[in-house]
Amino acid sequence: MSARAALTAVAAVILGGVTGYLGYRWYTGAQGPGLAPSTGASPAAAELALADEPAAQLKVPDALPDIHLAGLDGRMRALKDFGHRPLIVNFWATWCEPCRREMPLLTALRQEHQAEGLEIVGIAVDFRDSVTDFLKKSPLPYPLLIGEEDGIEAAKAFGMQLVLPFSVFVDEQDRVVAVKVGELHRDEADAILGAMRELRSGKTTIAATRASITEQLKQLAARRGANRPPAS
Image (cartoon, rainbow, N blue to C red; front, side, top):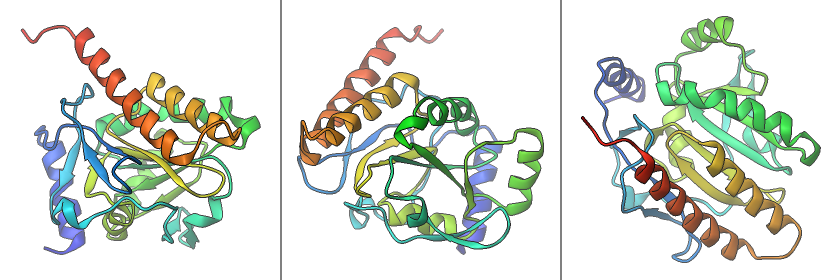
């Protein structure tokens, strides 16, 4: 299956109301660069994966990978051009409801952490005309890159199969600090950015920061799951 056909297939699954791949995976320093599966289901609603490659073959990189994608103007941009600052790389699509739900939070985080230089870069794994139409109704204040067929390869460069949404947190040294799979929530964002602030101050190490974030996300997921009303 071509990347373009695969992308269309994933969109069709979402539009049909079928949820695939539920769950969290976290970057963990304790086991080295890689993805550690969580033990619980995600409290967020729909997270979809395109399982076109065994997860064992994919690895979260230590540093921001060398990815080039087209901007809204059609010109190719290097993701590293946005580096050397706190960075959240958010993979999304117009047809992904959890992606749309987290956009106000991403916008707020960029504003609140402006003094720290935080930037958000959205990578739309979607077709250009769909993204353009979406932005006419719901403009976003942060930079956007459009993956189309290249979006799947961009996700793999971060050690991820196509799971939407997911957000990658990168520090000023372009080190990948955390990968949050599924809809980003306020408490999770605050925990990760707080840990990154501690790392920036020199009070902790990158390995300890990754391990701390992993544990915090697990606790927050468990708390959110416990607070959910039982299914009727």
